[in-house]
Length: 294
Image (cartoon, rainbow, N blue to C red; front, side, top):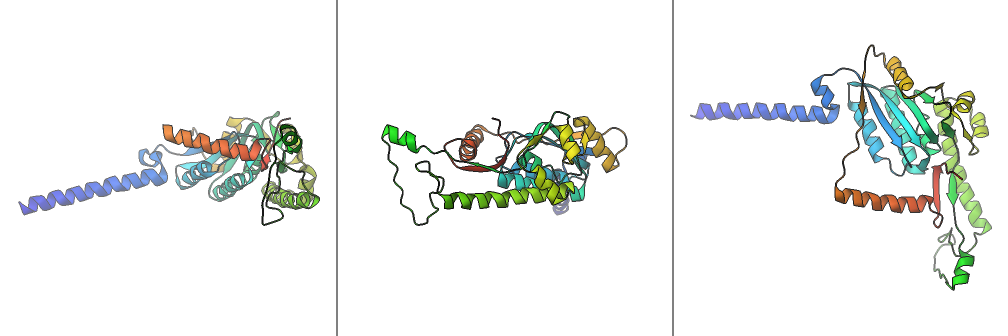
């Protein structure tokens, strides 16, 4: 009886180890590492305004760990967005390039922060009419002083620092405040230009000539050295295959966004509303690597 119980215990232990090892392999390497479907190219879509980075960073890290993914294609269609999230995605793209090729495929728009996250890639593809560039920083303020006066609204402020209410909608900006913000934006702009110069292997002086906020077509961007080639998504896939040394057919492994529950969706909408209000609406100060249409 004891031997039987011991045998059952050992058997259950082995089964538990097998299940645990399989789950660990699934988590760190992905399901294809278990099923053994061969070489793949990971595809990550970066679309819409960049207001957060975590999902993109997590997806890139999973592609880094997955040995079946031999290269990554970033499908970019975005006007850019907030500074810090763009920089965090940029840093993770840099880390990925060290491990495996990363090829960017630009769709309709890859401007400002969306261009920022693209520059460390092994190769960049754009369509002839893709809007590229807008290498600059923007910060907007709205002065509602006259409106307040007309409706009889008075705004009072108590502060302990001279710059604490910088950007107030109730008064004009002082020269000192404007100078302070210009220095702030200048530093962030310099970070952008340095990233472009390093990623695109361009002299910083040439980047400065291009980094005045202007936009380029894909053709113009290629001529300026901001992208490598003209082509669509599958041209980028073929280049990723070539750089990774993959022969024959290759499966594309798309990053799938996590399905959010009802409460998650409510929270996400609340956060997005707050972030968008701070960054993009006309009645609040905002700063970003963002291309805005007139």
